[in-house]
Length: 349
Ligand code: AMP
Ligand code: MG
Image (cartoon, rainbow, N blue to C red; front, side, top):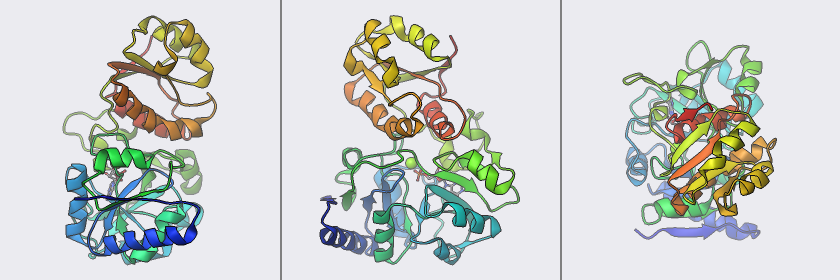
């Protein structure tokens, strides 16, 4: 199929025409990739079982890995899910925003969308482009990340085009995404709220809201064979670069000395701006030092991580090293994504 690629600019009227065209495609059961504040999403009507099935086919996504439905307003959630007090509190504090709630689903959401589950994931994106598209489509939009299954989530339209050109009807280019990591997912359909996937809305913020929040084991640990995470998507090896990625559990100096004798032209180091000089001295070429940004700027690390993992693939590195992130605040989201990318290969020098 031919994929329309439409670039959003400062021309608001033209942007509106682009979004109207995209909305028509969604209404007719087609696929549109669009920017959100987290990562790019691959959208289809969440009320149309056939349309949402096309998402799985285009991504090569296993059919038991459910989709998140995107709404223009939190007030719409009750049309598709059984909302509760915990959801109302979340919506008041964090919606629109980078957080997804798992609730018991209503019958109008097909089980192809929920991977066979009787719960549904609901999110109201902060991105005005995403919300306008949902409004114009007049239906909730089911959208996982717009990457091929197993690749890092796309944070730019170029990433989407590389993965999905020819497989979707339209790609809307809205520039680089702001946050760069997927939404926080919190399960609210049972007594105790449980964090299934960390993101920009942090465990600490959610604990402040609810008093107590459980952490699904799959967020920080490898599961045993046959063990099931609460978010089915967490069992798949996500975000995996082709290079073998090893995480180094060490302080800054130990990390630098550990990677120092490993420069060989086919090894990349994912590090911070402050590490550059020491790595150059250790024999790394500038191009093989992939910086997440300034050491304290975790927001920049989040925004850069997936693009750097794709860079590793493009440059054909055989090995890559990165420091193991902390488990606090937004770093917990980085920790969760990067341990999966590394296939849990963690070394403590
Ligand atoms: P993606 O949109 O690619 O970030 O993937 C969506 C994530 O949401 C996957 O990890 C799913 O497993 C998770 N998810 C979606 N619906 C549900 C649900 N009903 N219960 C638990 N997790 C869900
Ligand atoms: Mg995904």
